[in-house]
Image (cartoon, rainbow, N blue to C red; front, side, top):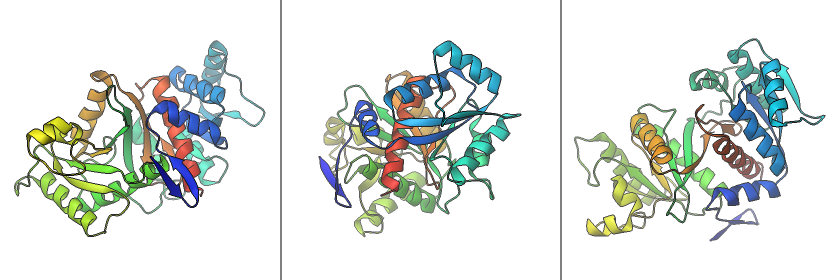
Length: 315
């Protein structure tokens, strides 16, 4: 499938290999890494440099960054640098400030707790607030599926209200379009696939579906509520008699709360052995936010996603 973006033809990207290849074809961006003194983080930096998709500014414990860099063979160019910081909070503020001031294009979370990193993102003077709800997306390449599956929001919004879910969906539509998915199929998940007045998730799902039909939410096909099985399995949807263009074919899984999202995220990684990349959406610039336990490969895929997102937002 291909789609048009202001006269530019975009092919739908269905694997991380395709996303990395797309990033390689785009102008290199500068990534500011907060708390970069970690082997997995620096291995991802090395991989990204090998692919030619980014340059880096590294903030953290300089001696540790230099030691790990020597061990893995990471060499910085003249345009790249390491900034020694006193603690992780200072590293986060410095990395975020670099993006806010236009000295870098993307900010990336290193070996730091998400809460500390987000405090810097949300800082009133030095942060990257845009006025939108910030939301997290985990993008998965799952064995046996012919397209990417996006899960949102598994990390930021604890119990999003309907207005917040509306903005989370808007954030997700923008990313899908950047990845060449012209009309993403978005499934609003709940425990059941019928509207139950006693289950708020089903009411929110039905409201979002109706907003989509009334053109309040554009650029996607949104339906729900869906249980997980009938959102991703055509056979399950048919067995339950669910008729919807989204049923069994979802590109995006909108989870009802952070607990459901976090469990689904980790199930994909540890049970399904899915490849993963993750971002924060809705900020003034792309934000790479992966788990500290994620592999260097996952961090590379996240950087590639951010490069593609950055190119789309600049058009």
